[in-house]
Amino acid sequence: VKLVESGGGLVQPGGSLRLSCEASGITLSAYVMKWYRQAPGKERELVARIDNPGGTRYADSVKGRFTISRDNAQKMSYLQMNSLKPEDTAEYYCNAGWRYGSREYWGQGTQVTVSS
Image (cartoon, rainbow, N blue to C red; front, side):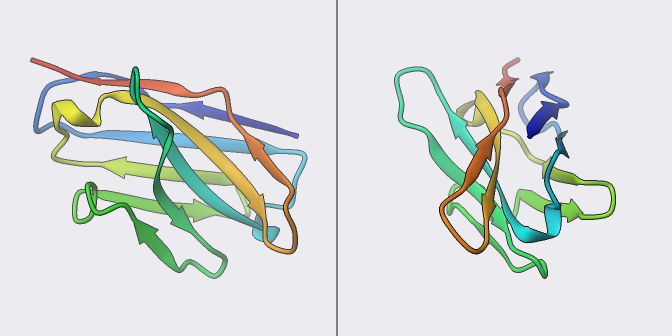
């Protein structure tokens, strides 16, 4: 099983990025997909989650700016991030949690830096 994130980078405040998470070795429809982030010196926090079918939930700090989505056939999860702020700077991680138990998998992370 492997989760691979991509799409991170350096962006100016107010800009946008789209993170992608490509899964292999699992049937994505059986998993709740989540995006977490961890800034230096801070604990990892849940940013967004999407169930199957696609019920979504977001951290208050990103509501209205971030959108999580999934494509089960392509085994992909996405995090569209708009109106980025410097406080969104963090390493972003994809997580797949099995809907029927405690099994979960993590990606290696992708860095997002919001700075002028």
